Image 1 (tube, rainbow, N blue to C red):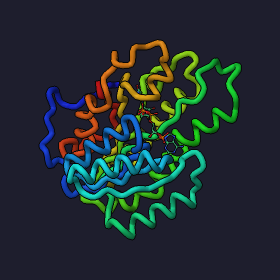
Image 2: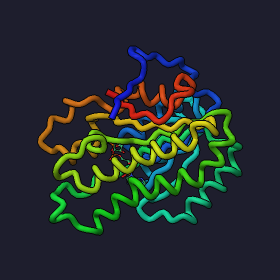
Image 3: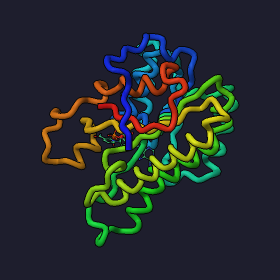
Amino acid sequence: MDNYSAPANYHPRNNLLQGKTILVTGAGDGIGRAASLCYARHGATVILLGRTADKLEAVYDEIEAAGCPKPALVELDLATATEENCINLASGLAGEFDHLDGILHNASVLGERRPIESAGYAAWEEVMQVNVNAQFLLTRHLLPLLQAAPSASIIFTSSGVGRTGKAYWGAYAVSKFATEGFMQVLASELENTSKIRVNSLNPGATNTSMRRSAYPAEQPDSNPSPDEIMATYLFLMGDDSLGVTGRAFSAQ
Ligand SMILES: NC(=O)c1ccc[n+]([C@@H]2O[C@H](COP(=O)([O-])OP(=O)(O)OC[C@H]3O[C@@H](n4cnc5c(N)ncnc54)[C@H](OP(=O)(O)O)[C@@H]3O)[C@@H](O)[C@H]2O)c1
């Protein structure tokens, strides 16, 4: 699989996302938190979606305190989210915003790190529900709002193990291959008929709680912080990537 990156030394302008409304899933922690703050600082109205209210509220307060556009907050647990929940979310957002300029599908769970021969089905299902099925439901029902934008960007979050399979990464790796497949199918469907671009982005090893639980023996600060990998997140969400679609990007 080809690996694309943002242009070398990419320096987005400060108002890159001014006037844009962007939904970020898993916005309360890790990379999603950093992306939400970064998008807001570049002028976007960010819809913060996640399952833990106090984490989302902390990001909300930080965005407000920085004088950025007032965000919106959506508490939704993607492990239990139904199609009806996603339809209601889409109609609620349509009442508040006349279009959506982007979605960063970022929320994921790691699940079990063990051989397939001893993997549990309940843990497998939860990973597929959060990392794949919920992504489908949100995308499916938010497409009309994205289609109403002058142009829009969907970013799916991938992983190294979603591009080359690796022992003991189980459902997580399989869910990321599915994510790459979903990106390609949707990008191909929308290529000639719509102004929506669709790409995947592998953040690479990043110092977050997911990374620390996957690699407990690793020195956490041997990896960059989420704030340090935002260039490609900005490039793909802003108009500098107009016309770029169907590609697999890496942030590092
Ligand atoms: N960090 C890395 O080295 C790395 C490498 C490759 C790919 N990735 C990918 O990058 C993305 C972000 O990962 P991260 O490292 O920032 O992980 P993280 O720190 O664990 O953050 C994950 C986010 O997803 C949210 N989330 C998890 N389950 C959810 C659910 N059921 N409903 C709603 N939200 C849910 C979490 O919410 P709570 O905080 O409320 O639990 C959290 O905000 C993921 O897609 C991950 O697979 C990360």
